[in-house]
Image 1 (tube, rainbow, N blue to C red):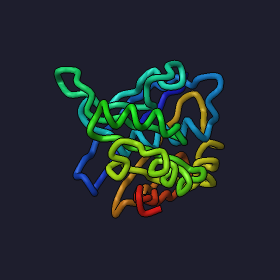
Image 2: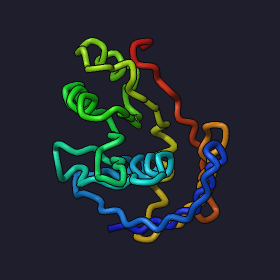
Image 3: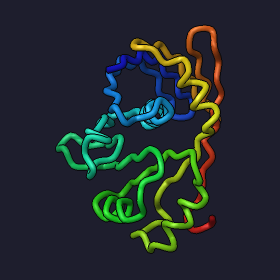
Length: 175
């Protein structure tokens, strides 16, 4: 179990919040994956966004968003999920988002090749693996992150270290 105290300043969305998050790290989960989950969580922060059972449940994403009635509003994946999984997700929920770092263009192409339902509506973002690994090297049981998001770029300060991450939007169907 890891704790993240996040001071979030997302000027792109006019969202400013202090988050105190507890994150269970599955034994098979790499530090890079955990950092990508945290980045996705900060980028997607909003009402109803929460962790799912993640790797402990094959049929759940890393994160999801539910409305006040409990209806699923967004399915948020981290990594490179199988096209069949995304096909099922897209049929179940209007908004599907993926934050990936490996072979992202190939993933986008496979969504079209495998005829994933409304694949062109899936939001796919590429994260820089080297930056994820550098942030992963700072992980501790308790982590204090200052996150500023402006112009689509994430500025992350951890202790005395600073990191910059610019997720690249990959258009599905244009890959």
